[in-house]
Amino acid sequence: MPPTAVRRSVNPFAVLLRHRNFRVFWTGQTLSLVGTWMQTVGIGWLALELSNSAFIVGAVSAAGSLPVLLLSLYGGVLADRYSKLRLVQISQMLLLVEAALLWWFTWSGNMTISWLVALAAFGGIVSAVEIPARQALIIELVHRDDIVEAVALNSAGFNLARIIGPSIAALVIATLGLAWCFGINALSYLTVMISLFSIRLPKWVAAVNPVRSLAGMREGLAYIKHNRKVLGIISLMGVYSIFGFQYLTMMPVIARDVLHTDASGYGFLVTCVGVGAVTGALMLATLGTRSRRGKTLKRSAFFFAAMTILFSLVQTIPVATVVLFFLGVGMLINGAVANGIVQATVPDELRGRVLSAYVFVYVGFTPIGSLLAGAVARATHVAWAIGSGGLVMLAFSTWIFWKYPEIGDT
Image (cartoon, rainbow, N blue to C red; front, side, top):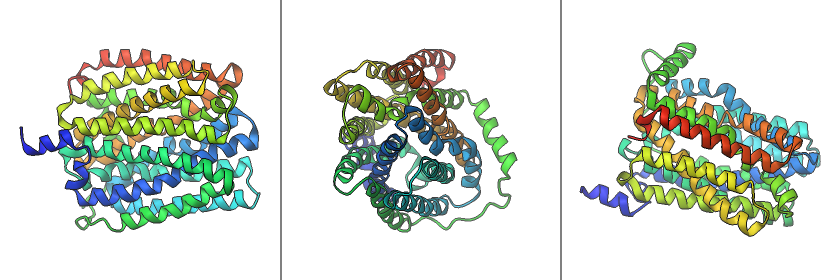
């Protein structure tokens, strides 16, 4: 076995040691994401405080994701037309502005549901460009052979922040007030800006025949349509986006109405998901090239669905803690392996557009699930909203792996 394969199999952080640009990017991004998760906790709790409605909590979450659904395909064209690094830099600056405005409106007592929805939508518009560009940028920071490990570690950083951010948010809400979840997030963007401007890549050269918007979108979609492996994975991720993240959207409602806890308890529950996700990311990065990615994706898809159903049945915080840990493990491995398989399959010239389609379904379909979960929770009970979603995922993953057996052979 080659030495590099051995290193991958025993050291989940080897990709950080091998690639300086990715190390710089990962460090700044992870520190900034602590603030982002503080903001996520703050927005969810603020929406519940302002409205006292599960439906409004879902609607605010949808407002942040809907622009990704509408605009991410065009964002992929931009990622293939312009410097991906520059697009990410500009987008992060705009997200800093969003965080600062959230802080000011909340701190001054002028925040309303309308303003909260508007600012969430603004962040979603920026994310529709930033997410495809950032996803496509990763392979420029590492080698193609390291992409699954890099995606796993990127997810580990995201979920490490998920652990730290809500815990700090709960403390900040109790001592400084809800507004400072947004203020600290605005300050945290300084770390990611420093890291982004420290990355050294070859000078970007514009294409002689730049990608045109509509033609570029059609070309990317045609590739997906004719590549069964990519089509099957993106279809799976679309359904999991709608039904798999409802438990996160409804977490404030579960925390208050089912588990009878407060904002600090809500933050603790989100932290449990993060602990599981980091564990899953390190497991995936450690497995490296030894694991068959398609088989791992199949197992994680069924596991994620089963844990979602189980979570809908919990009634106590100790049981919820354990289930959320394993939900985090399954969610992370499922998403990271799917992303890695797509990235390793797609040709470089189509990377931004194909990944924008991946983002289109994986992030953009989330508002559909948020609104659906809020409506079902209002009509019946929040447990029905989450449990029925898990059943749909279980049924669809059974069908997708039968329809596209080549996914499991990856």
